[in-house]
Length: 316
Image (cartoon, rainbow, N blue to C red; front, side, top):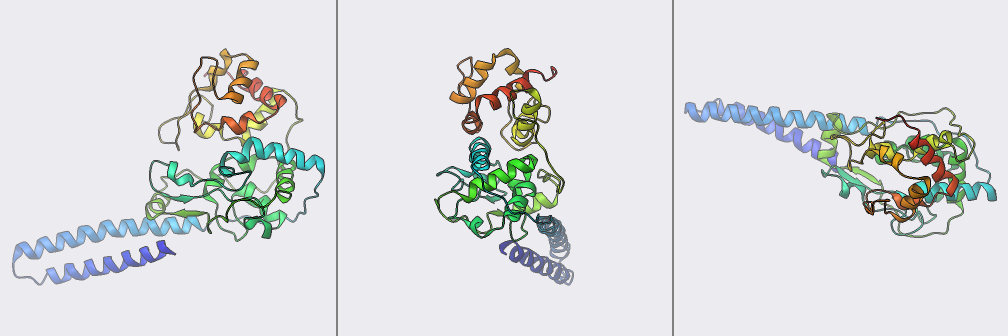
């Protein structure tokens, strides 16, 4: 709403500048006359550009849509256990700053520019999800759209949508059984600033992952490169370490992760220890921006699978 008001204010200011330019044309003093016209025209053109980009950003912000799957998740002990494993090793990286899936801190504060406020939601019954259907939660995970049809921007930038259908259902089953904890998430959880809308309208922000309504099937859970590839398909390693894991590049969202070919020089035990302790074989401590803690909660087979995938990547 604030951004709509800002857009209306810019339109009013543009109209005022045009009026000022017309008034300047009536001045007898040439300096006042043409100086006023040039200044008013320059400001009006610049502000018109900002207004157009803001409007484009607002349109883009509200253009994402996807159907709500018709499903009701059967809650079983096996499904809850798998959901807990996925949540601990993935979801907790953003949604568990103050407690188990009770919400995260404002991601916008970690970005290099003040493009808005983006708060990972409280997923316990203390948050809004207790009012959502299983299909609405599934859509939020798969396509980054909340129960009211609003775009969850940061969620759609992640690879959460690549979780298999079975793993997504397992997460839903696990969430349903959580105890209420934490505070209600701001509504809406994602709020672009005026700068954020301008950058969004100008195409200067990352694209959301494409909407996908098909089926995602995971390979068998075992310590193989094939399963490791699946795990890294939904983990956001490529968002920092580059699309081919050869290192982040300028222009992507921070931080810029290093080339993961370094893992080829480690043993499997050293890789697992690094993910569990946050210290690599050379004694270097991983930064807090690297979500090694949730990754380190994966079981031995999962970490072995990731290791097998990384060491079998071709040299970059």
